[in-house]
Length: 126
Image (cartoon, rainbow, N blue to C red; front, side, top):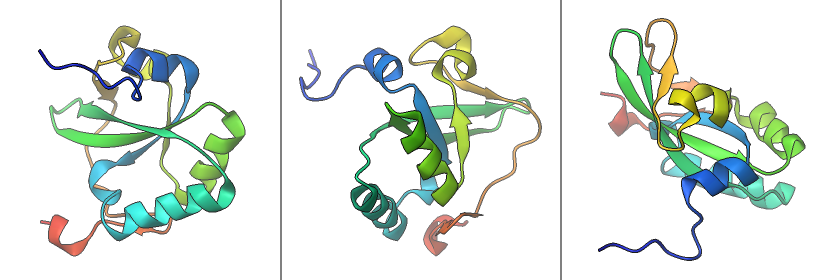
């Protein structure tokens, strides 16, 4: 049986203690962009936990997004102002508020290649 690390809280605890969450497409948070995000957090003295969520659009298209979870609303606002993204409410945006539920999105799927100072690396654009 696989055991959870004691240093990583379960998803329900993250949602309860860090409810201010900013969503970015997962493929935009890799490589150089990951470094930019980490550098910003360090410079601003912000701490966050990262979680994943599967976004599912009405047409059935699915994409993994990365949630940057903050305990403080102002920290999440600073992150959102700098990088863009979408505010994610864990109680409203997941299926019935389930910690492991999918993120049901309205409208038509459109891939994001650039947002704020971040862009999808060229090898991941195809």
